[in-house]
Image (cartoon, rainbow, N blue to C red; front, side, top):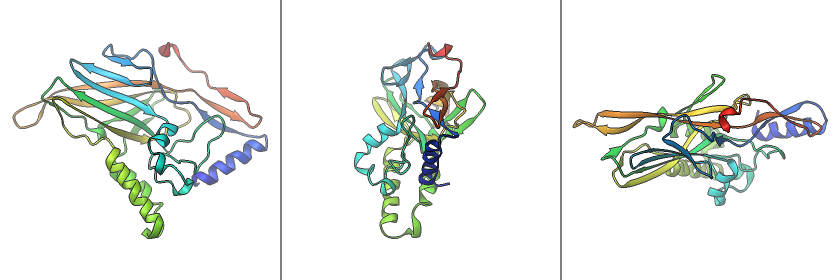
Length: 249
């Protein structure tokens, strides 16, 4: 079902006083990460530090992404922001609807001759067993291509603009040489309503290479996040599902 139709159906259901919608709060980092080399900042960024290497991961809300691409985040269905619905599926009072789950990944390398992170190896693993693999440019392009009706006119031009934004802003996975800093977005499918606690696994952060440019030293990093979930009932009640928040204290 198309996003707009789903939202209209949901709002009608709420107005009728029956049924419920799923509620999902914003993604936030767990305050105490599993590894002591991980630190949490006030803006929600989790930073892995090894000597003078920093690998930062920060969850991005739809509102933040709309502000980041303000000029492209207008016109509802005519929006060219590739990361959000941008008004084409208006949110209820209690939640925003996510087209994808997006993280900003930043790398500062002042410790090694070069390091490399392959974003295609990043995966979200939820406590309930669900897994979400990162989406590359080709997969996101195929998703948006479906909206380019007829491949002509204004709709095709908007599709091309979404492609251009993805090319400019996705994390590229290039080698980061000593003294360099880089960053970009890593995109995952939207979480299911039953997911509360999860980790983002960044496997094989390559720190050293041999003479043939083959990796000789790598580390795996685990970033932990959580969110509140529940139900919004037709009378306006919001019931948050209980879950173990001991790791969030």
